[in-house]
Length: 138
Image 1 (cartoon, rainbow, N blue to C red):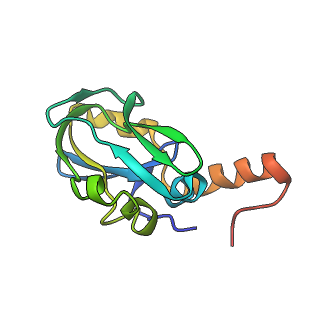
Image 2: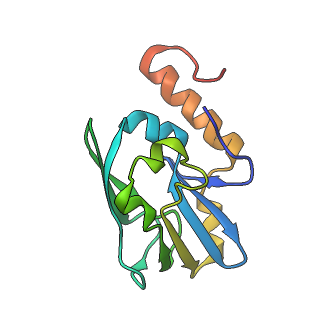
C-alpha cells in the first residue's frame, strides 16, 4: 500500500499535499482499494468554502457511494475536471493524476489535526489488527 511521505492524511483516508498556501487533496491508496472501481465523482464547485473535516464531495463505485471530507478549511480554487470523464483515474493514480481539488487554505494551523505518513501507517495497521488480527504492513 503506497503512502507518500511528505503528504498529510486524515483518518477518513484523504490526503493533502501543501505548497505555499494551497492544499491539493485526494483519496489514499487504501481508500481507492476499499472503494473498488470508481464510476462517478461529484466534484464541488470552484469558490466553494469548506471547513476542515466537512463533506467535500461524493464518489460512487461498484461497491458503494462514499463521502470525501476536506482535510483543511478554505476555498476550492480548482477541481480536477479529468475525473468527470474518467473517474477511474482515482483507482489508477490516486496520488498524482487523481488529485481531486485544490484548496486555498484559510487556517494553516489546522494541519496539526492531520496525520503524518508514519502516523497514518500506524493508524492503518491498527484498523487491520482490529479487523482480523493481521497487519497491513508489507
